[in-house]
Image (cartoon, rainbow, N blue to C red; front, side):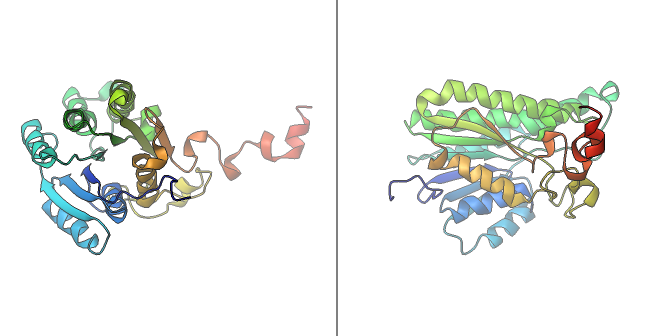
Length: 274
């Protein structure tokens, strides 16, 4: 039994871009640190960095923060070089940065191109920057590794979020392409697509109206996403690459509980179809 793959990342080095803020990023950071990795996080908020480092004290791994705006390619690339330099490879990368602001929701016909470009920069472009530097470092050091990019069920289309959905769909497509190209170097690339999750940005309440449309009858927790990420980074997923793991409580299935149509739930209605 000792030869079975585990979720233990002890001795490994990891990088989480967007690894703070109290939501999915923080949960991913803490899960990886608890798994024993030596962890670097990149965030644009020093306060958030200090909070997650404090929360991570006592875990098996370590957390070191670097401050940078991922949409500033020059500054971001410089920080990445500082993290990736050295003889010991950083074997794990998670890209969490993303999301949209309250002013970014609009009908597609009204979407402003500068807004569209800003959304793509924050949700897609930066991930190319980090992934290519990360992969180049691993290839140079002849080391295997794993990447997980955080997508969204918005990649499948959500009204008023054309830019965000396009960015996340692009992220999933780019992940598959990178998986195909880098598999020969034993670098795995996958994505996780969360549904609605209780985060500081999205709200913490388990909103009843939302939960009733989800088969599992609840919104997701950041730890639900972190657990999926940890699995995909670990040896247990050693033969998985180029995939998107949807973690949404079943919300993309299209029907849930009492919302099922009468033809399914009402015998009298079913009889009309016999």
